[in-house]
Length: 382
Image (cartoon, rainbow, N blue to C red):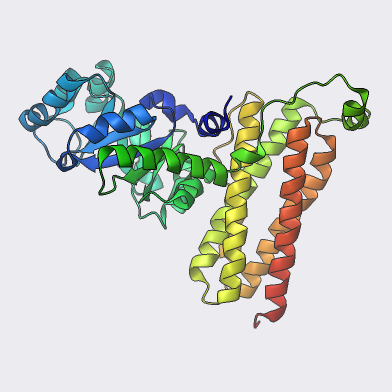
């Protein structure tokens, strides 16, 4: 498989099946940009969401009818309200999904489901997420500014099993990677002020950048068995060790994933609160690494034929309960040391060479993080 296809495949999440797109990037824009961008986004592999605000059924027909007649591409519609008056029109126009800005009634969701129209609801709290789940919606969109979205994603995932999309704002790979590392299944990005072809090309380039940040390059294809005895030397060495069983390995990987999500959220929160340039640089490096290892761990779980955990560990709450920055940094380092101990015990027992190498790289990075934070602790005022 070519490297580009492999990277894009690593981004696939279950929500891609719901929206029938190749990678989980939703490009949101208005009809003022013209209809062409909807088709080009779909062809590039993403999902286009046309923002039509408070459009009435007649207005929907006027805007979407010609677009639907022009081709068979899949696209969604974003509405500001609860969709009660528009569901039948959207279903008749064969819209692929509807994103509602207000909570729909269970009856509205049932009508949409009966017509084969998936419903996504915008939420800004865990309580709204639970109510949406009870109403029967199929997915959630976290409605917070990109800087705050990762934290809410963790809370929403803890409240409901529904797939979650986070709003990432502009085409910034770091924001998208942060959302996916927290367990979001996709990201909503704003249609840039450029032509349809440029938008589609930009989205595909963004997907590749996100795959790189999430560590797709650390996770190669399945290892090739070679016939040379020399090539088996390392594998034979591990064959005589107490290799971890698949189920135990999955448990360990998911435990690490939950811890890394909590670490990413913690480093992000401390970074936003820090006023010291040196500490900010260290926290930025820690956050970037935590995001990367989340991606590697999710890819590892997928490769073992399982679904990654969507939970976030409780480490964030413990750190934020400490009143001062020095104490929070010290606790952050204790969390990094916990990961080091887990990796030291796990990595030697992993038989797959690619995964073992990735875990050892993760181990080295966390040891480096501890040193960087220790340096700041020694220089920071108590």
